[in-house]
Image 1 (cartoon, helix red, strand yellow):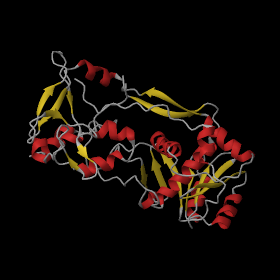
Image 2 (cartoon, one colour):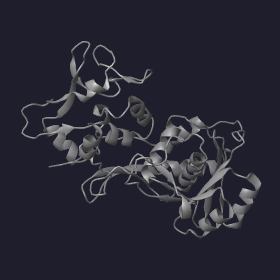
Image 3 (cartoon, one colour):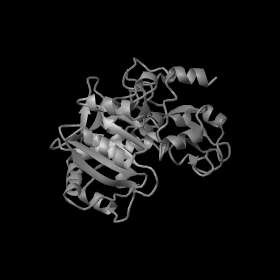
Length: 350
C-alpha cells in the first residue's frame, strides 16, 4: 500500500502509479454524453471561472462532478491505483483552483492536481540579469525594501517594487544603521543565521525589520511564506527552496527590472547568481525534492536579494502568498505534508 501526494517524476510513487491500472474519477457530460476525467486547464473556463465539458465546452455542475465513477485508464494491471485531485472535489470551487494555479507550481501540481512535478532547468545566468538591467532610476515608488545577508562581510540589497537599485558590502554592524538612517526603508529582512545577534538588535530597534528563518510549514504545504505573531512577531518564515524557485522565476519571467550601477559590485552580483545549481535529494522516507546549492558557497547577493523580496512581500506589495488558512486540516503522521484525503472527502462530500 502506498498513500501520498505525488513528488517528482520517476520517484517510487510515480513509478508504481504508472504500473497501476490508473483509475481516474470519470464524469459524463449531461449535454453531449461524453465521458472523461477532469484535467487542468481543459476542464475549466478560466474567464468565466466555471467547470466545462472537455468535449463540448458546456458548463459542468458540482452534481456532475460528484456523480462520477472510477474508470481504469490502464486496465489489466494487477496494481490498483487511484488518482485523487482537487478537480474532482465538489466543495472546492473553480476560483480556488485558478488561484492556486497562480502560486507555487510544485504545490499546485503535487497537492492540487495530484500529479508528479519535476521542474525544468531553472537558472539565472548573466544573460538573464543583463536582459533585466535598465539605466532608469527604479527608486521612484516611495517604498524601499532592504535585504541583508549576514556574515563576516554583510551584503545588502535595496529595491523598490520595480526591482533592485543599490547593492553593497559592509564589515561594521554600525554601517547598517547608517544605511537605514539614509534610505529609510519601508520594510527590511535580515538573515537570522549563523549569528542572530545583529538580527535581534535590528528587529528590536526598528519595528519594520524582520529576521528570516527557513523551514517547511507541515500544517499547510501551500504556504511558502508566513509571518510570526506574538512573541514571534519579528520573524518571517519561508520554505527555502520554494521561495527561491519563485524569486528566480520572477527574474526569468522579467517581473522586475534591475537598476544597479554597472561596476565591479554588479559583476559580483551576477557571479553569485551564476553559482546556483538545483540538485535532487531524497529524504529518509524516500521522497524526492529539489534543493538549491551554490557551487562555490558564494551566493550572498542572491540571499540579500531574496530577503529584500521577502520584505516587499511582507509589506503587501505584490503578495501572492496568503497566510496559513488551512492549519486545521489534519495531516497523516504529521509528516511530509500528506493530507488525510479520506477524512476530508467523507466530511465534505455528504
